[in-house]
Length: 189
Image (cartoon, rainbow, N blue to C red; front, side, top):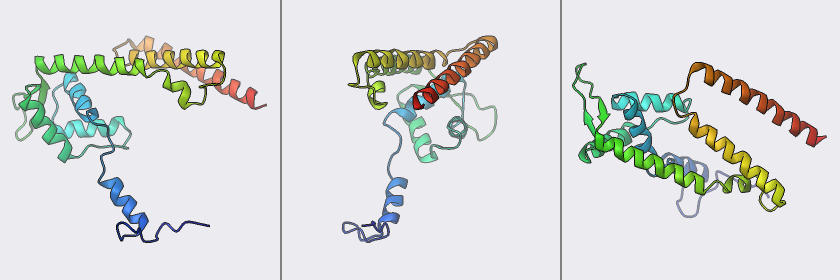
């Protein structure tokens, strides 16, 4: 029996398809604390205005996500109330830029360490999500080592590196990707 997605939803009296779109539009799709962390990271790099932060985050996610003014500006006000950010001297009329205070930098450093610790504690879930869990100890061990290496590289790439080092890393990753693709083809027969 094929389900009719435009059928009336008994609980809300609206067609189900429209109800789902409404729910998706009005439900937080970003984990709690994620936006605060991203904003503080941006402000640690350089002073920025709310609209500059929104545009950078949209650019980083290739247009998939742009925080709204209704989430950015109250967050900036809260960060200012907590003494984590302060306004910089206005160089352009009407544009308020913010930067992290020393207290904000300390808070961001603590948050970053906490996130890294949580990531390390959750590393065993990678193999489970990809179906390696319970398929023999050797496969599980190899998968954990693989995911740990990818995680460590991911974290290291957040740091500043020379253009040559980044180019060498890119070349290495392209070679590894090709090897993995070849292994997959071989396994498929």
